[in-house]
Length: 305
Ligand code: HMG
Ligand code: MG
Image (cartoon, rainbow, N blue to C red; front, side, top):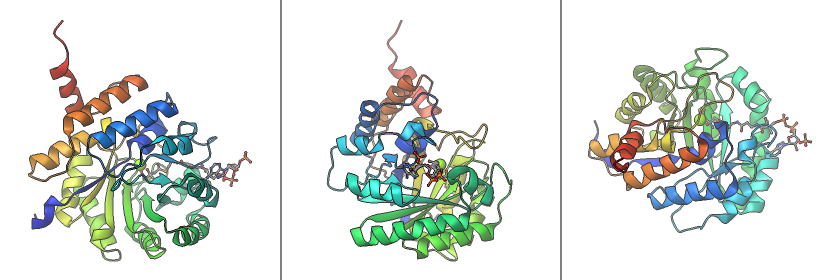
């Protein structure tokens, strides 16, 4: 592995990607408590919600109020997901300083997720990017289905590269490559990253792994070896995909931190504090965390009967 492995940036997506898929929606106060807990644990980039249609995604309703209630701090990024101009205007009104737009490498997923083709999604992004430039708002871009689609199965590498390149050239500072349904395996993940890195600088790439088939950490390790240094993760392994049956959440942040720290890399994150957030949030959601690290923490800290 290369020598610069110490500089790993984690993007916590639990309050958005995690909670958007939960059967039991959390209210504003619980979402704020979760995010404040993540900040206290040392995370510095936390996707705090989304400005999408509440009819499509009721779990993300009141994201503006969640954002407003958070204590802003120097060095803390709180990006919000935005699908179109309406969402961008809401973000602007709320005082958001960073947004994330999302496109798909698969036509069918684009239709199911945002009700338009890939080409139409780029038409929607154009005024968002223009507005963001004018308002000096940073934009991150997601590509979904980079290692497979719930409707189409395998996705051509050329489609992934093309969407990533378009997002980057349109002004996104970072492209997060989403294994939306967690079907990827390490060699495929590495090959995908290598292909995208032919068009987008490696330093502008992030990997967004879901753990459906238990491959997330293996895929992350394979992409670390390729040179990726930014990884998305979700506390407690929260989440799933409403448009993909059986899909689970992102790689659990505490499991990723455990692996990276075990490999001698510094994340700046207090793993016990992270486990407490995982357990408290999951208790409110009514299920166990999908994370061995959090379950061990719970067992060790359980009072003797
Ligand atoms: P549409 O129905 O085609 O939109 O939905 P429309 O423009 O025809 O508007 C329909 C209604 O939605 C109207 O309201 C609009 O005002 C409203 P009505 O007149 O019926 O009362 N509307 C909005 N409301 C609030 N905020 C907005 C907004 N835009 C329109 N921004 C739309 C298109 C994109 C809105 C819809 O499909 C949508 O909200 N989809 C969101 C889907 C979503 O959140 N998916 C999950 C995030 S992506 C993801 O998880 C993948 C990722 O994690 C990476 C990975 O894992 O791969 C990022
Ligand atoms: Mg996702």
